[in-house]
Amino acid sequence: MQKKKVVAICGSTRQHSSNHSLIKAIADISAAHLDITVFTGIALLPQFNPDNDGERVATEVAAFRQLLDRADGILICTPEYAHGVPGSLKNAIDWTVSSSQFPQKPTLLITASTDGSFGHKALLETLKAVDAKNIDNLQMVIPFVKTKISMDQITDGKTLREIRLLLEVFIETMKNGSDA
Image (tube, rainbow, N blue to C red; front, side, top):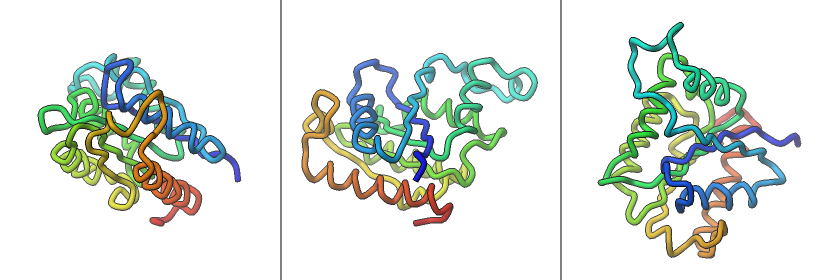
């Protein structure tokens, strides 16, 4: 099987965040099946403004959309901020509404934070609204993430098993084009 192209989006703008480490760990785990490209420009996207969409869209936004267009799937790893979705991540998703990068594209959502349940629920609703494919079966929360990841490796056995199972469903969804 040819490797599937996946764009990873980190909801944290911190360079050395737990979620960046999680993306690196997932890339290592899935290297035989997935070619993961990390979108590093989330902090550079301008604030969403529908008046600046269409022909007036910023270069950064156009590049982000093109990256998503070329992907077979999307991986989102994000913390929860103040019981909500990080503003930069919500802003990035907002830029895709009119150009339709998420509809029917398999999207794997992992919220990894101290708690994560509040932000996860909100982000799950946003991803359902933009029609991310199979999102109900491609999501999980990793509470107390700092106790489960170290040096870009998942150190908690239960979390590692759950992520491996989730990756199997993600790969199957991309491969078959159906909700696995």
